[in-house]
Structures are given as structure tokens and as C-alpha cells.
Amino acid sequence: MQKEYKKYSNLLIISLFIGFLITGIIIYDDYGISWDEYYQRINGFVSLNFIRKFFLFNEIFPNLTHDTKSFAETAKIYGVIFDLPTAFIEYKFKIENSKSFFLLRHLASFIIFFISSIYFYLLLKKRFSKKLSIIGIVFFILSPRIFAESFYNNKDILFLSIFIISIYYAIKFLNKNSYKNLILASLSSSILIATKVIGIIIPFIIFVFFVLKSIDDKNNIKKNILKLINFFFSLFIFTIIFWPYLWNSPLSNFLHALKTFSSHPWTGAIFYFDQYISAMNLPWHYPIIWILISTPIIYLIFFFIGSYLILIRISFRFINLSKKKKFNDLWMGNKERMDVIFFSIFYFTLFLVIELNSTLYNGWRHLYFIYPCLIFISIRGFEFLSKNYIKKYLIVITAPFLILIFLWMYTNHPFQYVFFNKLAGKEVEKFFELDYWGVSNKKAISFILNNNENEEIKIYVLSNSPYYFSLLLFSEKDKKRIKFVNELNKANYLVTNHYYQKGKPIDINNELKEKYQLLKEFKVEEMIINSVYKLN
Image 1 (cartoon, rainbow, N blue to C red):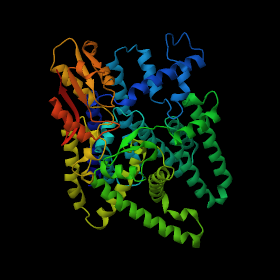
Image 2 (image 1 turned 180 degrees about the vertical axis):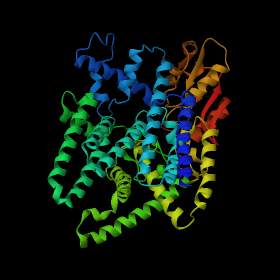
Image 3 (image 1 turned 90 degrees about the vertical axis):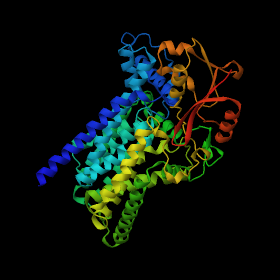
Image 4 (image 1 turned 45 degrees about the vertical axis):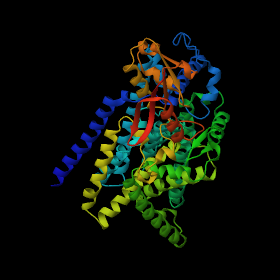
């Protein structure tokens, strides 16, 4: 019986990952271009030119014209782990069509996310049963916003993906302090740091838990200290290798990057609860509210149960700690330690962001890397209910919710990134930003091209969103047909994705409908995310 169960469970997880991969490969070209992609691509070429000049590779990389003066500015916060290799591929294979190289980035971004999902499953298996791990990876894949952004968010989802891989090897190193695990942990952590400097959170976790473990292991304290020194030495070397920005002055540039990241000077306005607020002065509850309204409610329920269980257990362990005076008694074995690690990362990150009043914008995308922690803790809650209360009926109860999430993602493709749960209320567009990425702009332009045969089509954009980026996903012929104009009376069409820096989106939309002929509205449920109006 056990052999049959093992056989079918292995077949299930293999089928799940194959289906996930095939789905991504089929749909990766359905998404438009986000704001950041255009600039991130340039960053890759600027970095490639920096390497050419640093190593005097003039013959290997001829005709690279990107100015390296901007290199220091673009690399202060973000590394080029993704942008540099994709720029190299584009350059080496002479990909000159803009549609091809942006779709290359979309596919590469998804592939990295897919690989990280495998690591996340392996991570769950270190703590839970195979059945619970499968449920956990289903939760992870059926996360509408995360799924959609895995194709075009080359910053935050990339960091989330590498974060998962990094914490997997960090936990392996904490469980077994072999030199193989030491190298893998330092290598993956360095890549994480070279993606975003905030990646130092993983080495910090390793340091804290390694020290706590070593305090009670006095017989091997010298050996443990030596391994910790070797870990940080390897981390230092690997980080410099993977982050070209550090090559000229490793320590000072790293500290400068850390300082810049902690106080990112973006002064734009955020539409939040029916008003515009400076991104540098958002209310403390901004990230919490966004997590609550953009995560499927069923996951949140399990998450709060799991959080309560872990908190209670940590509290009891801490109370008894003073009697036993052993730090390892904060957890019973490696599994409980994983609970403490994921719990600490999630809540401590939120605490720091709120306490430091960090600059956030566009929802909670800058904190996406703590989403795996949310899912992990959710499965802890699911595990408790499956063993103590609802037991075998829990999967039957949960399944309809997962089916509904899947159907929602399928129905609203490719706009899954505008997912809100019921906690957001009925008039979401009245309180929160919708298509801040501008990904739906591609659909609006495509609609106009398909419904107008003129050689020249003039479009007026009433939005802060850069519609011209979306043209990069069209053929050269279609690019020449579209002309963006700054004067309304010269345009044939008016387009907007209702993303502004002032004015209420609902009021502006009502005003537009009164003045102009509405041709097309792109919606997610009842939320209007893009509109096309006919002029003249």
C-alpha cells in the first residue's frame, strides 16, 4: 500500500511541475511590458560594457555603446544577476527585434521562477509530509499576482525566486555543517545579495542560528567558529564576483548600496484609500493591508492559525529557556527550527519596514520575498487542522477554494496581477491602484491596431503609464503605424489604464465617458484596468 501511495504521489508532483512548466511556456508571450523591464534591459548592457572596459575585452564585445557613467547609479540597489546574462544572450545571438528580446526576458524570468518552485517543494519536504508539501506547492503556484508577475517582474519575483533557493541551502548548512553545504550556502547567498542588497538577511539568519547552536555545543566551538569564518569569507568572494559594481571598491560600494536601498528616494504619489500619499510617508499599515487584500483568503486563514501555533510554541520554549539555559531548547529539532526561521523572517521584515518607514510603492511587491514564508506558515496551520480537528475532510473543504482560484486565474488571464480578495471590498478601484505595471497597455494598443487599417494612427495617453514601452512587443510594421501625440485635438484615440498621480480614477473615468465615445474596456471582474476612446 505504501509503495503504491509513494508511486502515485511521485507521479502527481512530477505531473504538477510538468504541467506548470508547459503552461508557462505556452502563455509567456501573452503579457505586456512593465515599466521596469525597459530600464532593466539597459542596465544589462551598461553592465556588459563596464565588464568590457574593466577587462579590456574590446575585441570580444565590439560596438557596445552604452555609457558606463550611469553604471554606478543603476547598480546601487539592484545587481545584474538577471539583466547581464540576458543582455549577453541578446548581444551574442544578435537578437535585434525588440519583441524577441523582451519575450526572451519573460521566458527566462518564468524559468527561474519555475526552478525556485521546485526548491520550495524540497524546502517544504524538509518540514512536512509529501502530501502537505504538494498542497503547499499548489498554494504557491495558485497565487494570482505572484504567478503573473513571474513573467515580467525581473526585480521582485527574481529576488523571491533566488531567496527560496538561498534559504534552502542555508537550512541545509544549518542542519549539516559540511563544507559542501557551506559552499552551496555561501554561493546562493552571494547571488541573492548580488540581486538585491537586502539579501544579507540570509547570511544574518545563518549567523544567528549558527551561533545559538554553537553556544550549547562547546566541544566543537572552535570548529564551528572556523566554519562560520569560512562561510563569510566565501560569501565575500562570491558576492564580489557576481556583483560588478563592487569590483572597483568592494566595501565602500557595498555600504553605499546598502544605504541607498534603505532610503530609496522615490517621491511619487501612491493612491491608497481614495487619496494620494507620498511614497516616502505612507501609513504604517500600508504593507499589511496589501498583504491582506491581495492574498487568497483561504491561505490567510491557515497562515493566522500557523502563526498562532508557532508563536505559542516559541513563547513556551522561551519561558522555559531560563531554567534550562540552553538556546537550542527554543526548538525541538530541525523542523521546529525551520518554523522559527520562517516566522522570524516574515514578521521581523514587516517590523523593520514599518519601523524604518521604508519607501514602498505598487502594493507590497518589494516584500514579495516573504511570500514563501507566508505559504510555509499556512501549511503549518493546515497541518495542525488536518491532525487535530477536521482531519481527512480538510482537503475536501479546501479543494473548492483552490478550484475557484484556478478558474479565476484562467478567466482573467493575462491580468492575474490585478487580483484582490473579498477583504478589498466591492469598489476596489475607488481605494487602491490597479494596473500600476501598465501590462494591459499592450491589449489596448492591439485592439486599436486590429480595428483600424490606417497607415498612421495617432494616440493620446491620459495616464502616467508609458504606453510607448508596449510598442516594443509589436512588429516593425505596427510600430510605424502608431504615433503618440501630446495634443488631444490631433489624436484619433484616447487611452488610459487609470493610473494617475492626481485626480480620482473613478471621477476621471466618468468624465471621459461623458465626453468621448467608449470603444473598449478591459476588465478584471468589474474593475476597469484599461480603456480605449474614439476621438474625431
